[in-house]
Length: 458
Ligand SMILES: Cc1cc2nc3c(=O)[nH]c(=O)nc-3n(C[C@H](O)[C@H](O)[C@H](O)COP(=O)(O)OP(=O)(O)OC[C@H]3O[C@@H](n4cnc5c(N)ncnc54)[C@H](O)[C@@H]3O)c2cc1C
Image (cartoon, rainbow, N blue to C red; front, side, top):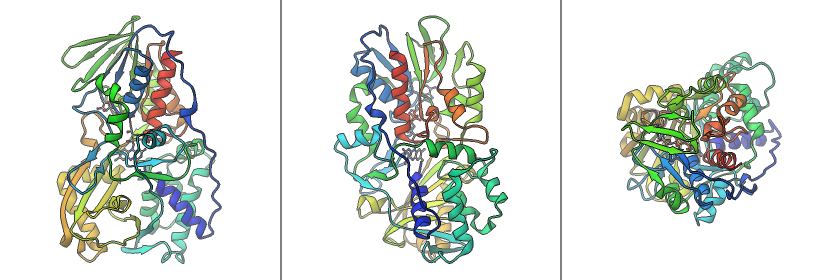
């Protein structure tokens, strides 16, 4: 998730005198003490080796509890994945920023000796009426100011639920600023503004406690941090093991994979992404309770992509924050800036309906994105282009989307229903099951893994 954009736009609006941002208090979930597990007799199966599953397994291993992690794909990390060998620094294809410094994730990266740098700052540019302009150049534009005010007040909404897009129309905001509002709300939350609940983002932002600055890791990938910090958990992972059923009728839960191999344990923690649950890839015996089925149905996940473009030379502003586009790419940024590296990279960050369109183009999406940049930079993108990669999370067979967002009527109550354990045997973790505002992030996923371990040991 790219909450830095919301925060950066907050400071823009503050500098324009539009709002007086009030920031939330912070607490660190890593400070809570987990049971030592001495009273727990039995073993645990964890389904999925992403952030939530690996961290849960690591906590269990630290308590000498037997644990096996079943992972469908051929690698660990899930939505944490780096592209290496393409530039002179690793490029994160999934999670890229650390949102806030009051979190298990921030602490873990710091303890591992990672070089944490600020991801805030830089000058943002907006495409309005087909022209690229900085925020200061647009400060006299009434529609721009109205859009920024709207964005900064979006998470103070009270009233009947509706989509952000509907709220934009109800407020009478000019159509020329809709794309920038979509970029800074819908796209930021991993979807499009017409699918995103205004009440849902209000609830989530008001529950947020991780701090308001954003960071990234310079010169190193998150995968390398995980591999070191959770080495013990990773040794318990069985790769290429696609779980197809979980039978929790008896004291021992029986998990079966697609090769008909069975695994047994007293407790099972399910951390698979929401689309896998929505697609009924896993059969539960007995079927999940209606409240959970309803939660799985109502929470949303859209398509999501990063298109990584390498250029022979920089043609954008040296101090670039983000470019908010008007076409199929809602946002571009330059990861090289934060890494202080020589290779010139732009990342196109595309979520929601635009990502569904670009996903259908396959690698052809690179040409579409170059054409959008050419219109802004007089053809420089195509002229200086060297290489590109498309990271399309919709096409990852065991992930099938970006990250969860609240749909209209699908807010925190649905996340609570998703998170609820069943019969002290079946437990649910993973970013979508975060119940206090940190869904769609790595640290949120870790907090759910920790919560599930607490439930298992209680
Ligand atoms: C493009 C993109 C950008 C992002 N940017 C950020 C960011 O800047 N900052 C941030 O904090 N977060 C970001 N996120 C979100 C973050 O990556 C996720 O919230 C987090 O990594 C999710 O972890 P998880 O453990 O819940 O799920 P996952 O990482 O998806 O792990 C679930 C695992 O379950 C496995 N699985 C699925 N089906 C089965 C099955 N049947 N049997 C066995 N295993 C199965 C999957 O293969 C996967 O490995 C981003 C995500 C994306 C896609």
